[in-house]
Image (cartoon, rainbow, N blue to C red):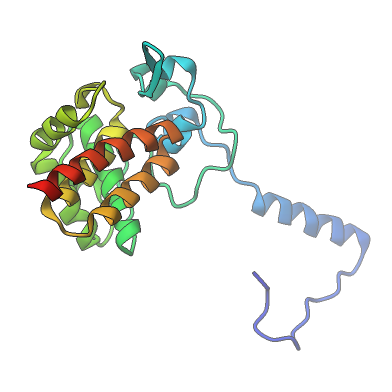
Length: 223
């Protein structure tokens, strides 16, 4: 981002090398972000999937399915890459609203994730002016959570919904809801769910989501 509103403006020349050193020190201090304590991001899915260990996956025969264990949820380790500034996760801290349908699904996922973990009302997890699409989607999905989980379990060859990771389960809930309600074309519902899984879970989770939602989409088309 360029400083100044016009090319004619120039920064004042520094008087001496001493003032230059002082200016650089202040700049470094201003641009240095304080390190977050582990407790402030322990519930963030982005921090978890960057530290997913073998214990966070469950083996069944020759297959490996992505599952977040309670220990991986609560583990606090230093982040390996900068934490995304758009992520407002901090335990049960409120979620800031996003704009756009894709961003709305992401916000709905954040809300459902915290709702699933904490049991707090969705309204208490929102901060600022609510995004209508996100709040309506999260509210509709949470109201039908048991039915959606049942559909996921019936369409999964290996996993019951309650044994899946919290992220995967809520991504699937959103996807199944959109397929059943036919609010968007099936390919859009599946693709959006896969995008969420790749971003916040793993490639294995994305394949799991794609397989289950693809089966449900075929069932819906035949109904």
